Every structure is written in structure tokens, then in C-alpha cells.
Image 1 (cartoon, rainbow over the protein chains, first blue to last red):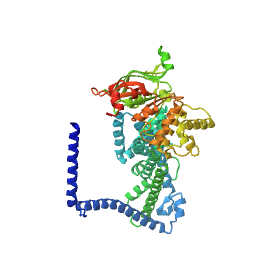
Image 2 (image 1 turned 60 degrees about the horizontal axis):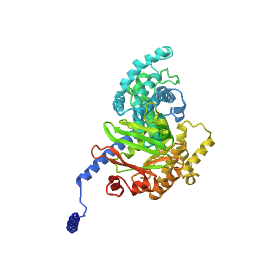
Image 3 (image 1 turned 135 degrees about the vertical axis):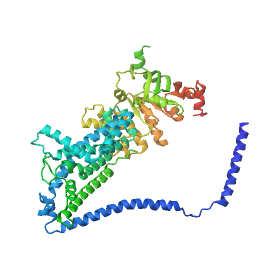
Image 4 (image 1 turned 180 degrees about the vertical axis):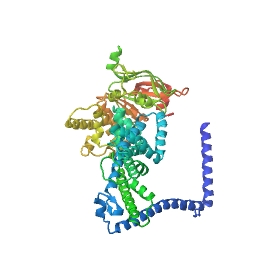
Length: 326
Length: 266
């Protein structure tokens, strides 16, 4: 009974297929036809990509062009630019070291805060926190990332500096100082480090964790010895992005680090960073074509090269340490 | 027969009235299963019958699922593995596991093996570790293939070699029991055969429990077989029949077992 039914069904199916085949042999048209919508979309997307590239090219062009004006001046040489210890272009002192050292010191302090705390937060969120806690904490971290930097700047000036003064004494800690700016900058970058590192940790396949647990590893051993190394490239990339963010940060250091170039390695003293200096000089009334005006572009170019190098390093780190887990 | 002798003697692991829940859903119900020492026990059954869940409850891997909960007892050396005082990490050291998909760490072959002993408080010298690594790799029949590239990535090996590396990694912590969760499902037939031969070899020293979808594998490479099925009424995995593999395959006592092994469903 059942068998005969199957046979008739099969026959019907065969016939239908045969019919479809003959019909399609006559009707199918393989000729290319224009698809206007597709072309327009492709063009629009190309324009989007082109705009961002052209903007970058334009910025680099302006930077290099005006920086060259600065370096062509008689009183400026590359040697002086990199070795002199004073920055006051209007009187011919064109050593970028004071600005560079302030940038590096504030960034270093920021990294000392942001890296361990950010990585710790990421490990907690990805390896320890329950679904519910993670759902609660991540938005809070993102709020921290959304605070305007000018707010952070005043936080440094009106909260962090008094705290540091209370801790180390008013004689030691100047009102404007690199430590305060650096610490607050670290807090500002923390969510970035945490979020990017957490992404990297979460991307590690759960089979690796199971493998470690299956061998009697504790949660901490699993996190630190298996998951962390497997996510290393992503975490290093996060660190480098954070570093370029710190180097490029302007508002906090402009408000809290100091308003005058000074070559000092004491973090409790005031010193002006490259970004802070550009912000202060350009907000005053410098005249177009003056040495000060051109010097700003030289600093900008130096900043650009620094972040470019950091990005290249991060790219090569990601490629070099990438661990394929499949 | 006293409880003590039952556990120290014939049986390595004994599940009594074990039910496993995910939240309020009972995934496995009322399983009584005594695993014989130094034998290969196969858990078979169609998808969703709870066999993997049962396997993972033996070394408390289910702890990693927040909603999972086990009722009843699983006895190991006379102790209930789910007693509040028992440390899951310690359990997993004694009851090792090999997973469905080979999951070597993205480290060198050597470091893959050394990981387990190190997290378990290894105090030996470098040369002792070298020996342990060699012994574990020999135990997993992998030594000859990798002895010249111990410091290359474990991920550079073929799928079958990776799975044997994972077995070697499990051996390195010297467990008593090795759980294998469909260890050959991602392997080609030749690699599968190698793993099966290896299991027969390992049986001399270890108790092996293997979940498999392949009935040929269960009939070829196991001493005892447990057949699970999902109860159609409450969707909970149920142990239908358990016995020596040849008996279960040749003369199944339950009609459902017979239907499954003759391929009428599943």
C-alpha cells in the first residue's frame, strides 16, 4: 500500500522536473542587463571611502607644506629642532624636547593607570562576571567613555590636583602639573582599553577555556595562561590605540598640565605638551606667516608622525602575534 | 558488597539517581550508571538524549553553565562529586576530558602538554618535564610524529594529530578516568581508527567513557554501552539500557534499543 503510493509520488516528481527543464530551456535569458540601483550604490560607497582618504591626504599635505615653511627658516635646523632644550620660536629657540617630554610623561602616567586597570576590568568582565553583572557594568564603562574631555580637564584641575597636593604637600605639587593631567587622562582612556581588551578576550573560543578547565586549571589560571595569551594581539593593539589617544589628547593637558613649555622630568611640575601648546598658541592672536604660526605645523607634523609610528607598530604586532585558534 | 568496595573495586564512577537540570528544565532524569574500572564505556543515543550532559557531569564541566544543577549522587572513590565540600578543579584533575573538536592551546606542542602539570603544582625539574612530555606523547601514540618539532605550534598539526595531542595533554596530569565527548566526530576515518586503537591501549591504565554518535565505533571500541533516549513526554534524557557492548548490540533487551541500533530511527 505504502510502496505504491511512494512510486506514484516519485513519478509525479520526475514529470514535474522534466516539464520544468523543457520550459526553462526555452525561456532563460542569460544576457547581461543593467542594474541602475547597484551602480548608484557602488558609486555612493566609493565616494564615502574616497572622502575619508582625501581628507587625510589633505591634512597631511597642509601639515607638511606649512611645516616645511618652518624648517626652511634660517634659524631652524632639524638638529636644533631635536636637540635644543628650549621652545620659544619667537626668540629662535626651537627645541621640541620640552614639549615632547611633557607629552611622553603625561602619556606614560596615563598608560600606567589605564593599562592595568583596563586589562583587569576586561578580564573581570569577560572571564568572571555573570551575564547580569556584565550587562550592568559595560554601559557604565561606556558612559565613562562618553564624558567630554573638558570635564575631565576640570576634574583634574579641581579634584585630582588638590588630592595630590594633600598627599604630597603644596610645595611639591604645583597647581598645574603633569601627574594630575596624566592620571585623569588614564581614567579617560581606561574604558577604551577595557572595551577593546574585552572584545579580544571574548573572541577567544570557549573550547580553549573548556580545554584548560578540563585539565584542572582554575578560573584565574585559565584566564591568565590560556585566554590572555590567545588574545594577546588584540590586547596589544588596544594598548597602542590607547597610547596614541593619550599622545593626541589635548583638553585635559591644556587645562591641567601647565601653560608653558618646560623641560622637566618631575611629574609634579607644570609643563606643556605638544597638543596643549598648539591649543594655547592658536587660540591667541598669532599672525599668519609668523614663525610661531609655522612652528605649530611643525609640532603637528611631529605628533602626526608619532601616532603614525604607533599605528604601524600596532599593525605589525597584530599580524605578528595573531594566534589562529582554528 | 559494601559501598566502599563497590567504588574502590569494580567501578570507577557510579551515578545514582542522577538528574541534571538546566534552570527548571530537566535534561536528564534518574540515571543509575556504574562505570567499570579500566574498561571503555560508550554512551550512545540520538541527538538531544542527554548523553553529553551525563558525560560532562562526571567531571563537573556542567558547573561552567551557570544554570546547570545536578541532583542525586555521582560517586568517585566513595565520595559524592557534588558534595558541597568537593572542589571541581580537583575533580577535573582526576577525571580528564577530551572534546569533540580538537582544542589545543595556541602554544607549542611541548607547552600544550606541560600546561596541565604546571597548573596542578608541578615541582619537577626541566628534564623531568621533558620526560613527562615524552611519556604523554608516547602514551597518545604521537611521539614519533612530533618529536622533532616539539616547539612548533600545536595548531600546525593535522586534525587527527591535534586530537591525539589533546589526549596526550589529558594524560600528562595522570587522571584515573578520561572522558571523551565524540572525540572522532571531526576526524577522518584513518585518524578515527588511530584514536580507537589508542583507546584500546589506554584501557590498560585508564577508565574511558566515550560519547559517540557512531554505533560502529561503540560496537568496535567499547566494552560496555549505555543507550540513552529522550523521554517523549517530558523531553528528559533517560537511560534505556546498559550492559556489555556485545550483548547490547547482539541481543538488546529493550525494543527501543533494538530499533536504534538497527537504524530504524535516530
